[in-house]
Length: 107
Image (tube, rainbow, N blue to C red; front, top):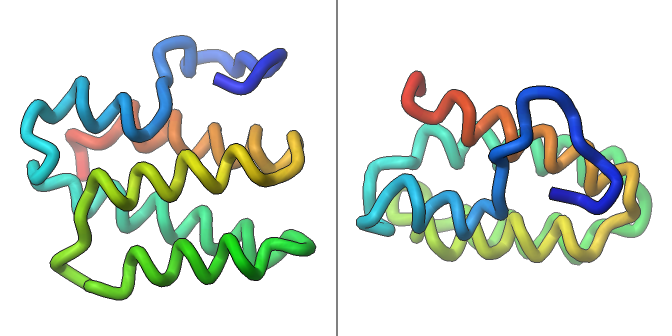
């Protein structure tokens, strides 16, 4: 959770990498639907943000395999992106992580 940012309902949200390990013991579990939606949210925010072309390119490259995306790699990229963006954007991306982790089973 980003320091100083604690939205209601997100108290148990972890890094995407830790979430994948915790919730899905098998890193190849079917989380494609949840991660695809989260990646779409991230991509939209990165497109609107300034100076994020390299991060957007990194996100697109990890998604370029279509159905063969490695969930662990996707989660790692999402976590890396959060580390490299300004606080306001980081908090927004964390909100997406929270939604993903809260509703993944409903996808």
